[in-house]
Length: 181
Image (cartoon, rainbow, N blue to C red; front, side, top):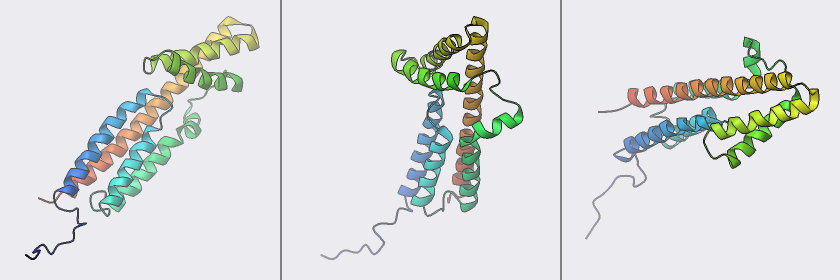
């Protein structure tokens, strides 16, 4: 008995290629929910999934142009803390110690109050209020610093989400436009 199959056994362009594209898009859609965890770099994760799709499919499903656009969006999303102040979104009134306390409090809040985003933000808020009150001994200033820290994190999460959705959209458009009937 001889084998009549003469194709490349590693060729994934048949059924597997569209299935891999679909699985990647579903996972990318699910990863958008991770925006509820402030410490997760969602735009970088979306970009990594898009690049994985590109590499596995030989950049036939994620075109090189889409890969370049997705990379630019990921860079913008990942560096938002640097360029957002240029747009007027500053943390004026929040000390460096308060900012460090906020991030430590976020980690503790996530562990101790296991309600996504609420525990994280509440932990950060409590930490910055405690540290700022200890620093300036004025409750109103400590509360103001807490609200500034919360606002900055929420602005950052919104920017991160917008860029992650844009990366997902670029990937989706690329996959749909390269679909062969």
